[in-house]
Length: 378
Image (cartoon, rainbow, N blue to C red; front, side, top):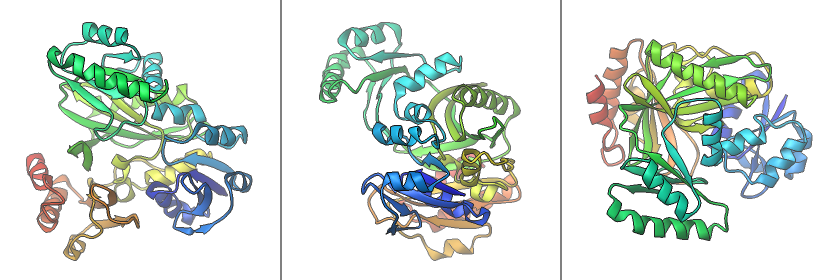
């Protein structure tokens, strides 16, 4: 079976590695060079997008910001899973909010802003503080504004108005009531074309300067897990989804509010490579190809540590039991996701003992609050 992935980054690479034992051949469409490549060796090329579409059985995506003409060409082939509409929802917060509301899935109170009238309505309907997010392409703190007192409102609107105008009508702003949440968690689930659904346990996420630095997979609390699974099923069934869908939640007491959706394999699910029988990358391709889904049960407590802006870590980390390094083969750049480290233990206590050792081995400058986070979770 042949699968074409739209995007030729680390997620396509990990899909190819995970499904090679199944005899599934994964190629990737590099949106930069507009060429089909081998995701494990991008110097090996296989022609244009139309060539790739003709040669594959199914098409999927590793990221959501794909040109609409590319999505349209793939959709026309009848091979694109999930659908173009599902992929677009992950790249447009307006569509995302519409989907959540249509499925009656809890999320932060919000207002869509395109004009000054909309902005004034947001100030009237929402309580301070308010976070404003660009509808398209904003992430990791970019394309965002925070309003803490009304004296700042005119300056923020002026900045946002210029931002909207510069987009030639493509952009809008989503104003959200800021949620005083207890923690952020995410759920990675998978659905195949036949409608079968499986979900991984909720994962706790920790961010540093707005970027995910560590995800922790432990036995989930039953009430929260059930809420998350219900939200996943509603959204995936509404979209007639195929593949992995990730949902980021804010936990507020015993309630989960959806923060964001990602119609693809997700950074917070990388722990599944060592913490589950079937990782998210294999299950995504299984779902897209309408194969039986693999087990999503947690087989042992596992944590994923992102490696940001570093092309190596001390070799002594490899001496830690049940530690696996995953490198993406990227050129070094400050803040860039270069790889990740998975650490597992048979028990929560054993996992944290190993994480404490790893935190001491890793350079503090590159992992500034890792040790404090681990100490606070024991």
